[in-house]
Length: 478
Image 1 (cartoon, one colour):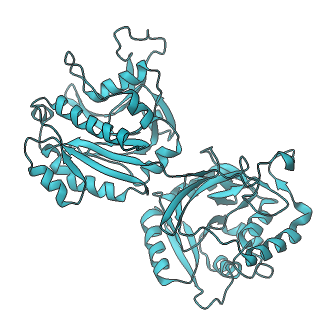
Image 2 (cartoon, helix red, strand yellow; image 1 turned 135 degrees about the horizontal axis):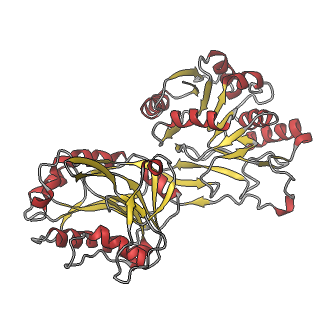
Image 3 (tube, one colour; image 1 turned 30 degrees about the horizontal axis):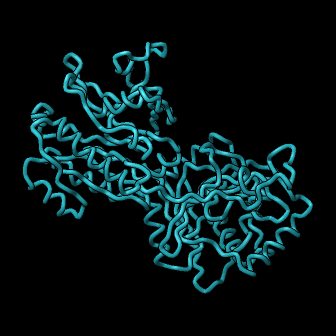
């Protein structure tokens, strides 16, 4: 259970963040709202009031101009407090604080975490560390500070020296770090509708912070301390959002799940993607149906062979991605619905081909079993396919599926896979008339033969709407 403390000056922003938190937190919580419309409180003062009112063991101090992009982030947070025995967790910070007191001035590799900033209609992902693992820190940025109530009550925010809106966070977390464990995690993603303010007032409080803590600066979890002349000052990595084309071949056979698919598309939390569905039905009725939902779609060629029409349609998407300079093609079949933060998570791995987990129903004897569409080698010594086929493989087992790890695989479906443009230029979707395999199988065979690694994020589970499909697969192939 989590107490949410927000110092609010704007009812509209407050209403939006409360709705966002209620929808995404995934655990019990309470709101402690400090009304600051007349500037009665500094943030330090407001947060201390929040500490006194909080009923739960974990307190989150949040800005009101943020939006959570990670589902069940509250559950993730509580698990991390338990896992790391941490007293404070943030989403951005540093493990080295230099003499200037500016948390991000140490630069790479000392700064940690990530924040999505949205200002003046433009968005960028500020990625401070290449590592996705949780990392130790000595200060945490105030956009998101989660602390154990007991620790926060003993440390408290310094409302006497930091009586406005700057350096209250750096002072609080820095004092806490002297005897407690701080963690920065990238597993909680949020968008901050501000780029920050570095004006004369900010500089005034920076000097106050440095004067207060000068005997302890520089400070780091590293031992020995890095030499100042070895640091890459202000060298924070700023990443643009890669441009992604989302789409798939489709036909009237998938109308039963169209609304669910479109809802899933509209819920994707990523600022730089386009959508295109390629309808290869034998008439225009389904194409018109898609357009009624204001989803971009075009007509693809119809062939009697399902494999032929699917592959021709998918190659239309491939050519669009290449010719219009998309960074990635996200192959998302129309009966697959991923979690909203799927693209943020996949992009973070920085892999050329990476899939998610979804299942098919396979009939084995008289039983129906769920089989994940992600496979690994059975025998790593298998001779490298003189016939250009994949070696023996098996689906991911339960331990692998529950690991929430990135796993190198040998084959997957094209239901939910992110493909970099370099791969698209090398591999065209195809099939072999002498076999029954579809283009997903041949795509993985081509990856394997070109020594191009394929990965699966087992922490991303997708819904696959196949149980209520009104058509059998044999009918679709006709």
